[in-house]
Image (cartoon, rainbow, N blue to C red):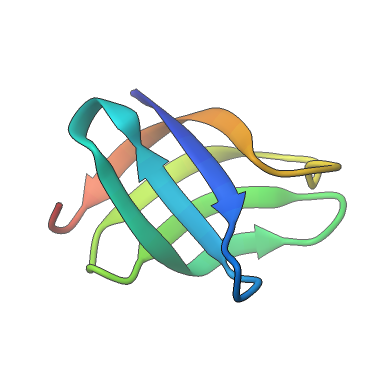
Length: 74
């Protein structure tokens, strides 16, 4: 598992950042996006897929989390 950061972009979307590999990309979809359950499978614009354990929706961003690469490109 890798440490990642998720933040809001200027346009209002979510941005995924993996510091260890200096990868930054827009999140195109998130599996769970409700106040009670947020996270799950994250699909990136570049085709990569990562998984974060679902948590209650964070009160503010940026947030640091642990993520597992599921499949795709980097």
